[in-house]
Image (cartoon, rainbow, N blue to C red; front, top):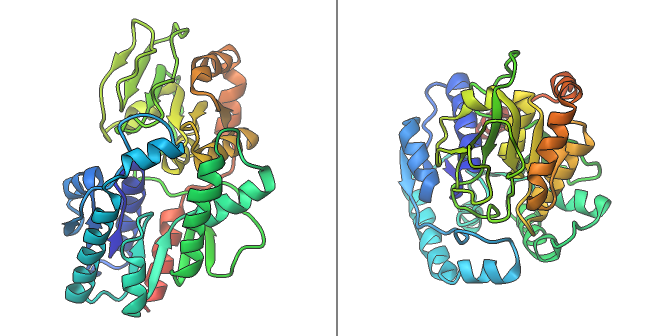
Length: 346
């Protein structure tokens, strides 16, 4: 059983884990509780029954600053209790052998009280450890000191096992926290041909997209996700879809936001990439900086710099392509996550 969040990023990695569970244990009875777009996408995959929760999400634009988080979550307390009650009813009726929570925490206390083996798929403990080592990114104080630390506290307090996909391991973490390679969807594989266009993939919510500026790019530009205002006149904007893997594989330069699922897919595709973290989102800034430090591409800590970073890659495309092709980071974390869950089931 999975409890997953509203975003597409959480959904794609859960799809990958479910595929691995199906491969390893075809008779396993899997149920998913999901909200918003996650529920829509999981129902479309038809991998298992989907139980809908009340949607809780951030606003349609803006940053991870205090005001936007508060404004976007005025209905959160009521929906939290509604979703917690729904999770309790599901646990009582399904009587699962194991619960895995991905990002959402409605089921954490309920599962703990019912003494159901509880795992979570969450890298906040690693993010907090990395922030201690790297320091808080500029403008991310609220996210780093409140959101990430609270999430990390929850992961240390409730789950029996925390499954943390990472780009680079952090030392000295609790023994219950298992760091695994990144998780990507089936079919995310590198392509050896010549890139065709600049491909931009953002979230459908619009969060963090207001300031992305790509106007100086003369190469063909195709965007997927939220409508962007600052693009060259020749850009094609095709809206939100998950059916974009083949286009991403053939990108001359890939532009993604800093969510871990998006960064993981860029790693797996081995294309020159610019990572544009959401303003004020500490985890995304950590992901972007690690991505650049590992030589996988460039980070654009300010969204307005995204176009300049793309032009920097295009100006030395051969070198960036070589570095992207030659890295040795594996992206088979779904298999490891499935192994841990099956081990917990026994």
